[in-house]
Length: 43
Image (cartoon, rainbow, N blue to C red; front, side, top):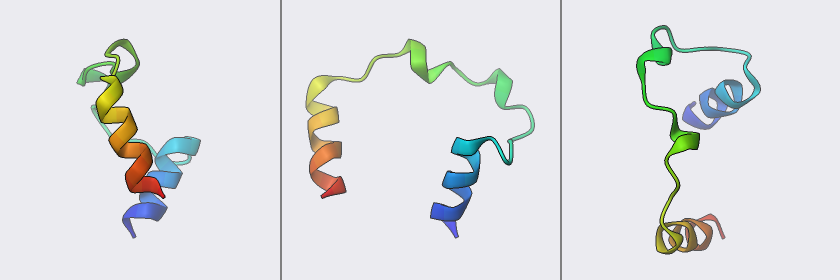
């Protein structure tokens, strides 16, 4: 169910009320080591 919800959020088919009050994640770069770990988890 959560993967379906995540896919719908990505495509913009659903939205979270009040989400405009959260931080802009695109303005907050991720550390390189965190990204490397995330890529390993995805495999």
